[in-house]
Amino acid sequence: MRDTVRFLLGDELREICTVDPTLTVLDWLRIEERKTGTKEGCAEGDCGACTVVVGRRDGDRVRYEPVNACIRFLATLDGCQLLTVEHLKAADGALHPVQQAMVDCHGSQCGFCTPGFVMALFALYRNDPAPGEGRIDDALAGNLCRCTGYAPIVAAGQRMYELGAPEADRFAVAEAGIAERLAALEDEETVVVGDGPRRFYAPATADAMAELLLEHPDATIVSGATDVGLWVTKQQRVLPVVIYTGRVRDLRGLRETADGFEIGAAVTYAEAIGPLGRAYPDLGELIRRIGAEQVRAVGTIGGNIANGSPIGDMPPALIAAGATLVLRRGGERRSLPLEEFFIAYGRQDRRPGEFVESVFLPKLQPGDRFRAYKISKRFDQDISAVCAAFRLRVEDGKVIDIRIAYGGMAGTPKRAAGAEAALTGQPWTEDAVRAALPALARDFTPLTDWRASAGYRARVAANLLLKLHAETADPAAETRLVGERSLAHA
Image (tube, rainbow, N blue to C red):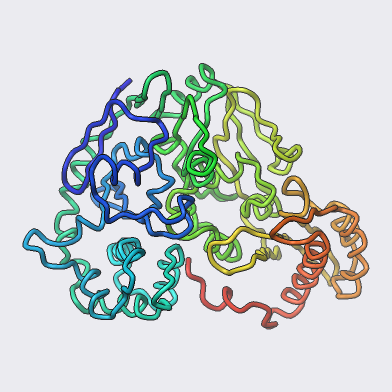
């Protein structure tokens, strides 16, 4: 085992031995490094004021991703490069094109949120050489501003490319060298650091992770910390043992086969949106509305499944698609349909020392139609009131097979077994769908909470089934404000 966390802060190597396992990048930057450009706004990964950029090696290149420093644990940076707003200006004090564009376009007023916007735009600048306005809007969806109305910031996102080509940027020039330095930090060791009796483990292989979980079956497994981070920042919980999945190379693979996609549990939404969105366009659109780019850069599909939230967006879609889950304990593996993993609110079929290793998403077959819908109070960066997904096959005008899954309608993501039975074998008509609505109502007993009332949820669930019919019976029907005509993930 290795007892240091090693990463680059800008171009300077940092090696840290003693660290609180849940110390956030934000607190470390501000308190230890005195880099106060990175701000704390919400402390829950929502406002973007704390946005930094993390670089990960991708072959001989570096993939730069915007990250919420307020909920990212410092020890997860092992093998990465960390960039803050202080790193952008040149040695002679000249502003980076992103910063200069914000000045030119009057993109800052009170200035509190400005460093976060600058870093979000910097990640876009490094990753996309010619974004349209919609792409810029996506890149900025995780940053909130009370002053500008956003139009000047979007204008800055266009102006920055006029001030300098990304390929000529000094970060592009240095990229190969940074990638080489990051490669030198990689090894097969399990990183273990801590503060007193508390420990943070970051294994490099699934075998090492399986052994650790047998030794520490009560450990908190952390991937993107988009949920666990709030346990620390909002609930002030103390986590004795943390095991991090982000270094486990065996869990980071996404492999397309003839039959479907094998998705490692540590694959992030940012990594999955392209290949999954091309095969399942509605799934890509659903992922685009999970958090914002800062969340999708670190949040994982496996983590979203494992935390068992009844309002997680991915499980209903994966259940409707017929996904299966692979769980591992030590050297033993077992597979089960994803819907069987969720037992009751807060309870999943996961034994002590067992972890989610992968999920298999089958491909659509000829004639299959898949739709997914998310209903929330705002389009970007919001949690669902109701999420619905459908996989439908109609032959000769009749429903041959249909899978219906909802989130937000029960204590777990759940299939609508009664509605499925009522529709199977029936003509695919609006009358038949309406006749199945009473069965759908019996499938669920939704709750009232601050996101929606039980009555609203029941009405929305019924209307989404009707919407499925409208879209599939008449493919030209315009039922969406965004999505089908301009896929951001294509």
